[in-house]
Image (spheres, rainbow, N blue to C red):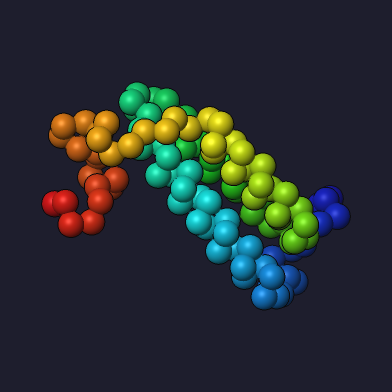
Length: 106
């Protein structure tokens, strides 16, 4: 049985508010992925990425705008508290792995 605010995907029509929230969630997910760049150990980076993906996937079918807003706020707090604040001057001399390189640096 699904929680009250969760609908089946085939019966759910998006409203303007949902589109706006969706763009915020996508932006937040990208911020979380970018934030893991500064984690120096591959295993820790992998586990952090896995945790973020699981958290976003768990809330994937949430349809109640108030609950979505709450989840966005709590994830913003988690990102701020759990990810180190590295700047690009601390990046390794050989650069980040290929899929993390910034455009124009190849």
